[in-house]
Length: 315
Image (cartoon, rainbow, N blue to C red; front, side, top):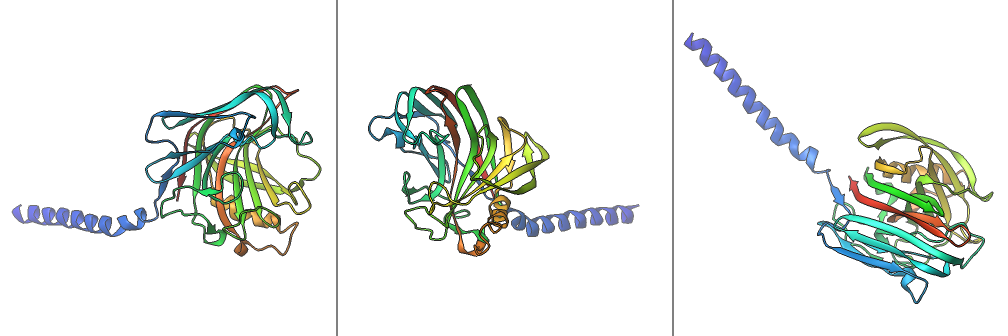
């Protein structure tokens, strides 16, 4: 009996010992590629940025800090000439509340459907209006070569608020350039927009390039989303940058939404080359990622907004 007990105890000890060794050996392999970047005002407190037509407040910029990164915040009212009212971006702790409230809105360019894009930016944009660089952890420093991008997901927890006027889209706005330190965006630079929600009607200048089916996570459940893909060969002028538009068919007006962002960025070149065959992925850098809302007024009146509860990038 004692011999059997000793054998049993020895076997148990051996199993525990092997388990500990395996755990020690494998743990670094699981953790070394695990980088979670929390983007927001994680140190608490409250502050606001107001955007009005007077002076330069339409492009006012603030900075918020998390434990391992920072974000630029701006009303970015790039098509506002004059109006009564304001855009208010208020951080209450880690929650960003955006309220757009204007009457008598007059556009700089009345032919465009968009009034502005209030939101936040991570990365480096040396061009108007940010002309700066956020703080970034060593695991994800931008600009970075697109071909060297690690696989990463981006998660937004948000809710849009559509009272009066039009929310053209709630989206990511992603910038790729061939010169990582450029101060001016033009062809063949690339803007990728991922529209999680949209109301905008695309003009005839947009070329439908296909449909991309990807798995996204919505409130903890993995589901398939079919993104219709459009290419805008030139934005704004004959020498304007290339636009790639991923338009979700789910119309995600609220929720906790995770998208495979590195996949969407890299695969965008499959669609770009349908219009510009000579452009190669290897020539491009990922400069910056923005999150925000494009909006439009109706007869000069708009009252819309969104709440961004959380933004994380996971590598």
